[in-house]
Image (tube, rainbow, N blue to C red):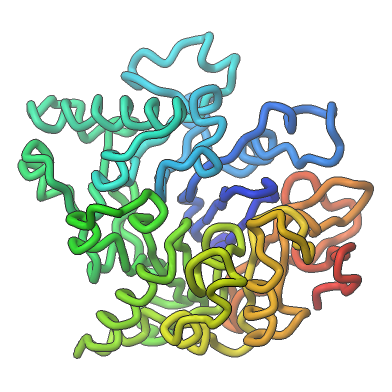
Length: 391
């Protein structure tokens, strides 16, 4: 049985993560594939597409991810979607699509709340593909549940057409154990957000309506404890995290009580101050109690990952240097990791990778001759900005 892994790609200010389960099921959370990163034209950018093609499975030579999760529609979370992912009837995937190595998304998770707020072509194309799949399910098409047509609705909406698909809906507080119609016994997701309250907030933004979830890994189906807990929250702001804290702590369900614990915390909005308080930071210098409280749910050897450019003490935000200081106060400098400064060799940032073990998430062992460019880099990289090696 393979070892489950979590991989955070270096994409400057953006999010792009890949979870690989023990049966090789792959779950992609957001995408950010820059055209300039492809090939060897720019050694300062990691080639995400090449690594993806080496990391995911193929079916009849066609590359696919089991699940694609779009936390929200900002361009830095769906950049490169149009050129790198297949859109349309999977039965029509042809030689041209294969030559372009377009990746099929067997199942898409989407929130109708963020579908209602549009700002870029990439997001529009995601919605077009989602609505193509919705139409198949609404009319009961016999192919609607085939790979490449599957959908899962995350959270609430004000659109009557989605109400007819409640059997495909998951809401905050739900625990999801099936991924691409494969039941998992060693992995699950606890869904935290978005909430119904956010649907009727006239000032809601895509950030505040981000999908937030906790990825849960076990070593054995009978285990009552989790060997790794990883938190993903898109660009969710402190308002959202306050609701998450309140609702979770008020739950009487023991399983739900574990839903705030974490070993790995992907810093929301690329290490932005918005997780701690409103911006600008100088006008709102005090972190919210709820944001600090969630960080206190960290477990032994917990780490924060900032998917952002190098974090400098300047006004070019995000990332926010003051936000980094708050995270470092909680986990220590060695356990605060920045994707853009995770450099193993030359100038190219490498993915931050963890293997899920009985001792928790650990960096993979890099043996002589390992393919670093294929994502073998764990925490052995040198952080050139802060000057320490992650240990």
